[in-house]
Image (cartoon, one colour):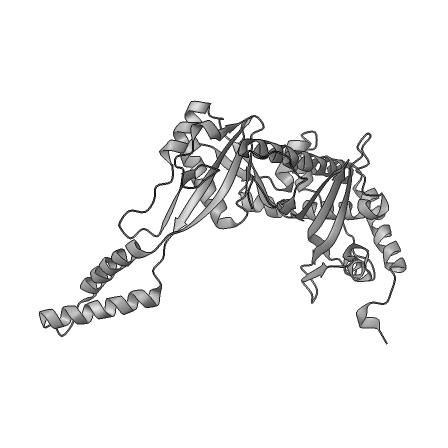
Length: 205
Length: 180
């Protein structure tokens, strides 16, 4: 599923805020480009990537602008150590430590520190799982199309979009779309409408 | 107002829009009613109906011909409202199919008319054009619905109620729970 081929699941957002010029747009994409995991305990990373290939970061400037659209990808990598595997490794390490130092007990802080150390080692061996959603920003129309249709990637998209470009994203749900398509119909008046009563029979009001 | 509140506040408009598309698909050949617009739009073979009250909160009707079924009109007559439906949109020799969600007007599983372009920039430009074209057909209908809804709500309500009643009376076959 992508803008390039196959079926598409799309959500549209209204972009609220000043539209950046090409320089500011590319700067925002560069500033928050996706960077792969290094060491540490981080389990999730988010950043902008090229729409053609998520390994191209930051997005290639020559491919971002397509007519009046700016097209790029939002890449989210996650890596997790399975809890049971972590516990097994930590238990072994604890036993080894207690034996080497001839300890009867290891305190809570030392346990947590050991667990973080083991987790960081194991995280280095785990291959991250990448997820990419595509973004097509209609710079003239002030609309953004995205293949992010579930709440988690939408939240990541909204957050990073605000950070990179200083613009807010509002889902183009019925009332907002109504306000956009029919400015002569006041949104307040539409909000004040009661749902139609289409129930038939004796229980209908 | 927060985005989620805005979505919830407008949910009924999305539901009634799907209702209206359903009605126009069956009663008006899927036309938008707008002058010069030759496109057609129909609800297809999957629809989800919801109701906050009653024992059944959600009813999913799929395959066959659910939009003309007795089951669907029985559910509508009991106050269930469409929350999601597969839609088929036709304009000239182009066809779009997608699932529309009433609360958000998201379109999922959208199939676009084919594109001939081979290179990525050509394909993406074609597909964005086709996307916008499909959405503009839908938006024209949404606007026509909104104007009707805002200015002639009583007329719309009575038209839809009569349509449900008529289809309830004429829907062929017995419903499964009334078999012998």
